Image 1 (cartoon, rainbow, N blue to C red):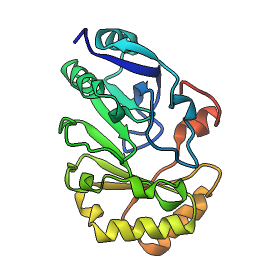
Image 2: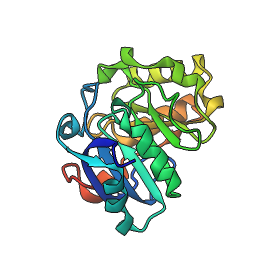
Image 3: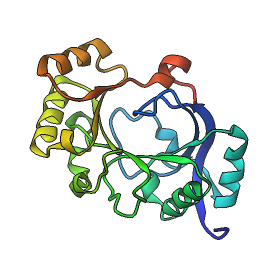
Image 4: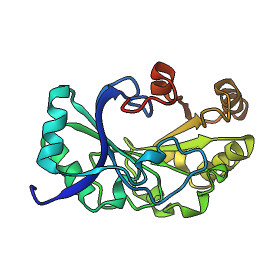
Length: 216
């Protein structure tokens, strides 16, 4: 375990702002690197910034947070081979582990018990053609698909993807408004009008600390 090193952008203790775990005090481990360049990305600083850390160093860093929830996020965590080892180490330390992944890489090696929050990139992201569509068949009931919606076009596209691939029957589907591009009330209205069986969510951490604060 000591030999595995991962480039880490930041580690912090905060309130989980997204997914079905929203509101939980959580240890966040943000890895460096991302293979996508979404138009609305709010973590561009994670593309390259970071320092190499061993798994024991990471575990020691989050221990004082005294929370049972650990979220591995990015960047794109699965772009580094050591991430799976990190996840296994967190599980062994008895954390409830969630993984936030951009949906372009396979989750086949991610332990089943991990709560996988998988983005499905809508057209306005500029990256909808990069998705690993096989992930649709690899999820468990406790996993979640997330669509960040930046326009009505995105919403209609998300609806077609969900219906075509029976995503509602596989696990929870989350719709989130792209911050500053779609108003929460607007997206909520589309969901209600379409009678879409999805879970609406916002980025609670931005509502608490603002849009530019890092480490939250």
